[in-house]
Length: 171
Image (cartoon, rainbow, N blue to C red; front, side, top):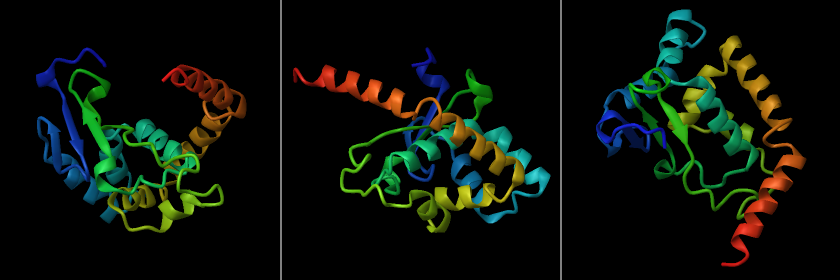
């Protein structure tokens, strides 16, 4: 919750064409633009980086790859939002439906990154296009390393999962 008035935000689902709260037709077009254009061209990359919060985009991909989210590709499991009152009105991503992560109907041997790099899903095509840009690729890799050494470190994951277990045990 960012204390944003209800009429000052947009929440979309799917490939950006399902209005969950207010409506905005630009995201679906942007997603197609990213997937169909050369992100090595500075003007293309700048257009995307001004419109999508690339840190949020990377964090979203990294968390789904790390958690081996088996259910990620389902179009109804992707949600994005933006508001002119926060984050320069850039599109940001948030998680929903994480019940098929960390081995639930998946396998630790899955290569989720390869899956993302080879599948034809809208969001994956956008990632595939962006990762060809050296600036984005470097940012993504450094962000992945950072999260693996902090948020997703064994020590932190054990602590967080232990706290969640203790919170849910009484139920």
